Length: 297
Image (cartoon, rainbow, N blue to C red; front, side):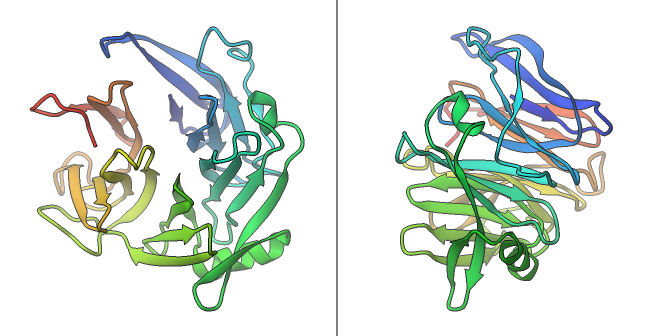
């Protein structure tokens, strides 16, 4: 599933469909008539949440499975409240009857939102629940507050214009494109650390421009968190391993066709042997495979 980021009701969500051999069998529109659909995230019940990035943007739930009842009925969720420049969604599904969703906002005072759902399944994002906001405290501590203004002030002071976000094992990862930092929140003891993206570099390439979307699912089995990059002479896709070391996976030729562009839409095929990303301004979708035929970690 991939977003289309365009203005004035020309954006939406589209789906690539695969057979059991990982071959593409269909491509179709799943959501239309929306504006600046930027990032999003996968729900525990395998629907897609697509985030609009404009002042009145919302987070839409989309059902990509044609055999499910809501397949042709995308719906605005409660994640976005009264609207905002929303980016990405991650979820903690430790307690399946009460999943917790985290939503970032690309705004200089865009609060990180935490939504505790009252149930599991499609309706959990549309009925009930409670929303709180991330507030950083002294001593690398944080809390979840019901004060929207406190959340916005914290974002302005610590993590303006937050973008990609991922959850794993009581830890929340998200990036700020302004500070060019990855924030790592321990949700158990409510402490956090941060590091500059690309700070510990291995091999060729560079991660000098703004970090954008991230993917970090199945981190018990996988080695890397994947990052897209906004701007620079050779924007690329970069990865971070469990030891905090960064590598370049793929990048545009510095000064070439994709100079100043933005990498977007990172995703894997169901068998994880194909990796997808796009260059947004050029309107190009790339499919990447490994020479050895193995899966991407």
